[in-house]
Length: 154
Image (cartoon, rainbow, N blue to C red):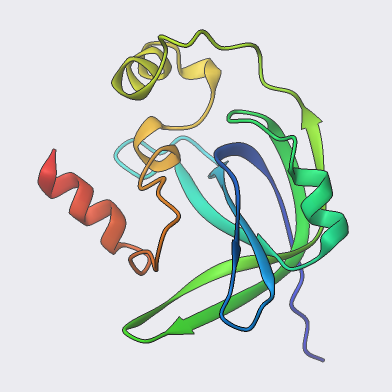
């Protein structure tokens, strides 16, 4: 029996973005930061998981989401290919917001936000995994490249 079912609950680390594909289909993409179980020192504590949907109802559900909202998605793992690369993402069937993020001040962006999260580990996910590569335009690096490129530039 073959089965491809995924359920994720995590923090929204990239707001939903919409783009039209050459085929005319409308694709909506976002990213979730999901904690790994356990607290083993020296190991990555979270994963940034790409999510996408072609479904109009799901698109309507996620359109009001904001950074740091706690959300849950259900779907299937897919591998997307394009000229020059591929990546894995969750193709979402259903999505819901579990908890709205607390209001944020405008001055708390970028490094200031990461520093605040690092000082208060109870606020969420490890900053470097949650905020890595938030751009949506064009293909993104294959898993692992994004993190290693970021560490080299740091």
